[in-house]
Amino acid sequence: MGKKSRVKTQKWGTGATAMATPKEMLSLISELLQKCSSAAPPPGQEWAEYIQIRSLVEKIRKKQKGLSVMFEGTRETYFTELMAWAAENGASCEGFEICHFGEEGYGLKATRDIKAEELFLWVPRKMLMTVESAKSSVLGPLYLQDRILQAMGNVTLAFHLLCERANPNSFWQPYIKTLPSEYDTPLYFEEEEVRHLQATQAIQDVFSQYKNTARQYAYFYKVIQTHPSASKLSLKDAFTFDDYRWAVSSVMTRQNQIPTEDGSRVTLALIPLWDMCNHTNGLITTGYNLEDDRCECVALQDYKKDDQIYIFYGTRSNAEFVIHNGFFYEANAHDRVKIKLGVSKSERLYAMKAEVLARAGIPSSSIFALHGADPPMSAQLLAFLRVFCMTEEELKDYLVGDHAINKIFTLGNAELPVSWENEIKLWTFLETRAALLLKTYRSTSENDRSLLEQPELSFRARVAIQLRLAEKQILEHAVRCGRARREHFQRQLEEGAPLPRCQESSISLLENSHPESGLPLSLHHLDEADGALEGLAGAEPGDGLLLNGAVTMENGDGTPHEVEQSAKRTGDEAVENK
Image (tube, rainbow, N blue to C red):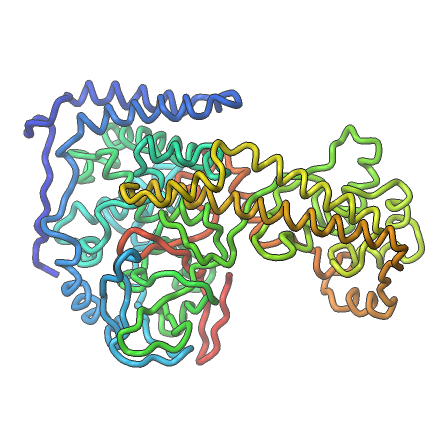
């Protein structure tokens, strides 16, 4: 790897566009840090704060123009070097090649037939950029002194990437040179493109992502300029916001958890070559082989020669794909809209409802999800709404009535209503709530469809409008389903139809099958999707720079994908941690 890469950079005062002295720049950085460290704005003022922060960032970017590290040529120029480097270091390089696939960007193309579940790609640990390799790099001394780097592996990985990019002799140069020069995450959106996300459920996370990134940049700018342990970092001469945004986006769209060498814990990693794969619906097919110490991927399906090879990034919503990965996946089988629900503590029946929910393993206040499927809700949300709409007598029946504990097991079963009246109430509530959420949008679905027909729309504006439309379509579906179910159960009530009853023997089977006594099999945990959404929505502006609730990675074109979490492979059997 002795060949030097052709890297171009400028130092302070050497370029025509260098318009600020270090002292002037430090003043702007201090102003940005102060603004981004302030308390959250009052409700309704989030957009104004975003614009203020963005304005400061744009001032800084303007004065830093021409100072960022750049590689000569385009990224595809270096694909041959990447493949040669991968082969030299023990990665599999046969059976596929890097190819461009139109709007999907770069991906892997099969050069021969590949069977489903065939192991076709592996990447050894020494090729991976990890938090552990960062600790033993030039970044190590600063890592030992800085609490943020120690607490946030994703930030450490971003700085590791920046330091290695600036080093022409870095072992990882063949990989780094093939990374996109920019991404399509909201960090790169123009102001007008972000406006398309206003009123969507994604907008608050977009604001937080931008504010966190700006604050972290300002903090580390000062650290790099003043901390003794940062004195040997090449970033000291030129550390721009654009550099940091690029590193953050590279990690945010590509990071993945793998086990440490001894298998005792997990660490974050960037996985060269494998991160070229694009996303499709399916199952996770990547694991980590501790015995051979390498990341391994088996084929998701049969692939013919010249087919594109896909992997499944995980059960991400399109909001998560757009915010953290920079693309919208139209065929997303796991798309959803968040809905925050809770039992009011001032309600007369609060204690009883909270107790029934607790016995079902459901919080009295939580973030759930509506889906595009039929029914549009999970068993957990159905159970919550049934309890939410119960009368006092119904609550008593589930608390102290005959077989009260066993009845908890039926709360999430769509075939076993509490009562016809209860079903009418809950579906009426869902219909009304979804209709109210639809009214918060500033445009109609028809308006969005018309906008998407405009050929001059930028890619990022199109992604934003697609997300906005998808949210509305899920809510519109919930309204239709709520209305249809309400009318159905109203007819059941009027006709005096008998309520379906669960056989006691069936309840016993359910109870005995659960490993943790006293909690329903179907309700013990909230949905994986609901839990992820709750964690994301509950994140405070200092919880994490990358705001990434799940580990992710990205393909070559900057349109990322969800990455499989670490797994251990022993022999032919893989155990995956999703």
